[in-house]
Length: 438
Image (cartoon, rainbow, N blue to C red; front, side, top):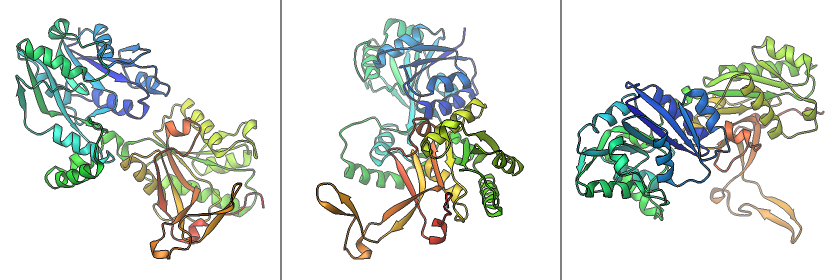
């Protein structure tokens, strides 16, 4: 029987569960089991969790926090019950050992640990996390604040005081009030730290939050304000580059462009493998000779059928079928004649450190543009006749120059998500490409 049972609650947490589980498996204390309570995730959460390693899976149809925890605990066997959200990532390998060490006194019902933001956490949420979770260890005999994103409770206490099955939130504080009223104590352990990308409060004044964060930045450790879990840093995420090629590469210039693109992708410090996607045997020969892997284009995606999003989604499935599970997909084509130095590296750094869905190159344009409107004939786009110095530019998307997107975003069938970043391309040479149909 394991000493500890780690109960992880999840719904559509593919982006985070990998990092959460990797850090759990790296802990100094290894006498535990992992129970995943999944609320019918529609992404690859469960597949990723199984691949990295869990002991039990419980699937629930309706999520209520206390009920989900109770169901996970009921299927577990450890004396200590660690409760963790799937999007919380332990900061170091001593997280579990530290959490458990504070829970061994008989009068201690439970322990909760510190939560810190990541680099792309909004200011309002950074404020909440840094104010709420301080650096001093606390013994609580009256205060019943408790937080189940990162906590441990003793099984013998839970058997007397299970979590409320019916409340929609703050099941942790309701439980803490019960156990404190019964004579137990709660411990806050600041050395048991997890990254938690969103905050714990609602109805926020964003301007006030921004001011508060500005002050906190002057007194907090820089790593606590702008950090990332180690496994999410650009050097440690999996990046697969996919380069679709339209038709044959018959002329010498076409073969040279493809070779140059593969070479650029292979020298990107973050790219693990380069895949060329085509129906052409000649392209396959050129690609493999240049050190790239080949994915054969199916007939239903022959030009002009299928969008680039269809192509990337199909290619990602093929990559994963081959045993490679990238976090990020980098798309580029060989039609562009020249790229900025280090451009691919910049794309990957932007998407990781800013927590975006998609990042691509864009050419800033200050000219005046109009579009046809069914109601008004024509309508102006952008800031019109304002002086250039006061205008906001329009950006011409250069997707084929280079675009990165998270694997879940590509798998959804849409390359561009809600959270978008654009790397400005100011040199016109980098916008020039050949016409594949010329």
